[in-house]
Image (tube, rainbow, N blue to C red; front, side, top):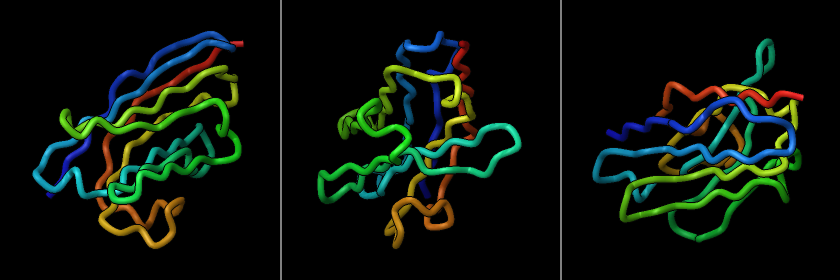
Length: 124
């Protein structure tokens, strides 16, 4: 069993930066792919970024590529999403998800464990 808890959301002005964190528990956390997803009001949940546990590769949605960085701290059982040059359209609830072996890395249904989310609001 793996548990994930997000933190670090908040209100930021357009152009600003924010780092959201995903704290994991459970011995197997370090062997899970961790993904960040977001869901804006009235919209479907969408992929933001992912960090597989075994390759060191990172994956980003086109909408955040070049503005966001996902990173892992294995010693702290944590994954971070650093977001820069934020835009009002980045406003959403951001979710951390853990997947043992996601077949499609940007597919929410391929992730097994989800946090409750953290709100990120970008004002114009």
